[in-house]
Image (cartoon, one colour):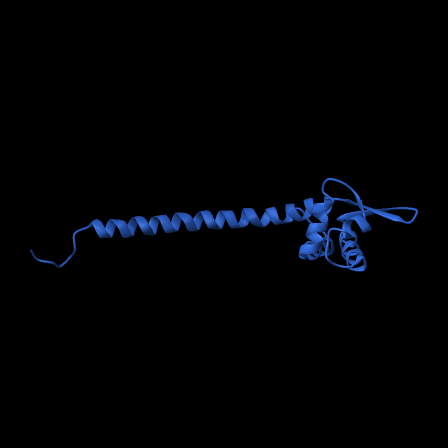
Length: 125
């Protein structure tokens, strides 16, 4: 298994756990934006959006470039790739177990159907 930084993964998962931060990431998917432009899309204060951006920045999901007084943010999907790779390991783990469960349930259903079709024992006609 590939090793990932626990701190890095924790920061990424913590950052994307919040719906506002996920919406900020989605808004930056196609183009960079200033903090003010990002904030205009949300019913919260500029200060609140700035705090959300800082969390995303600490997780490495946003890069901020300062041009004079403007802070322009852009998406950095690298940490999301790492988180996806980590999750992929567990998806494979669960797929194997769910496939086994599916085979077990199918076998049980087949046995149940076979019992329904078999003549009853101990009955005299």
